[in-house]
Image: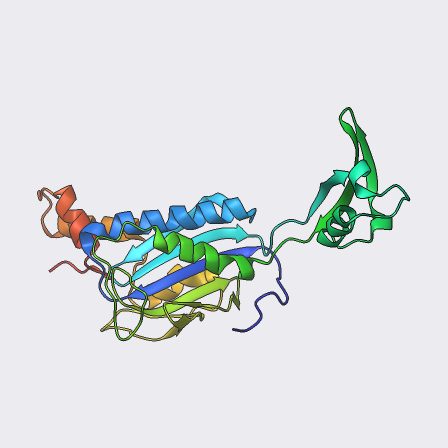
Length: 266
């Protein structure tokens, strides 16, 4: 796998898209929301900053997508104080460092002579100031995604081709994009890229996204409304335009919404 740590860049929108075969409409909302919550929690736990209130999850019958706004390129650096052995156990009677002192020094990447001493009411201890650089988003995102995917409420996971992994439906493309930069890695045997797919009939693609914040616009130009709220509203408007007195059943509306990518009332 290509080194993902080079040139971490600046804050930018993080886009993740799994392109699938037709997802089960009755489970789609819960799978989408659980995917978003799992990745959001993973980013927060890792210390990766993003604008939580502006971030969103999207879904269609053929895709699950997450959009985290202004995501940091790496964790913040941390300065830590690490306590080692008691001074009495760190040196022998002749003042030579013991294995306890040598082992602690190795663990913090220092020589014994570089260690400090800290006096407390319980005695004197060796300690070290350690600067811990933050890990890059590209090194953290794939473990976060894998953990979140394992925890999804998938009703009947399936395998496809000769792969050992399983998911609710076969996955055919993968986007992991930070700004205009692909965070290189693999899920479900697929390399991450920056191209999505449009409507299966009207504009199949692939379509280059360019930048993560262009995702919805690129898909709409390819006859896909990825935002389920916009799709739901369009379906309702089209039904009422055709039949102003129609009663729109909310459960039926939800199901139809998860069956189409580009609604057209007939």
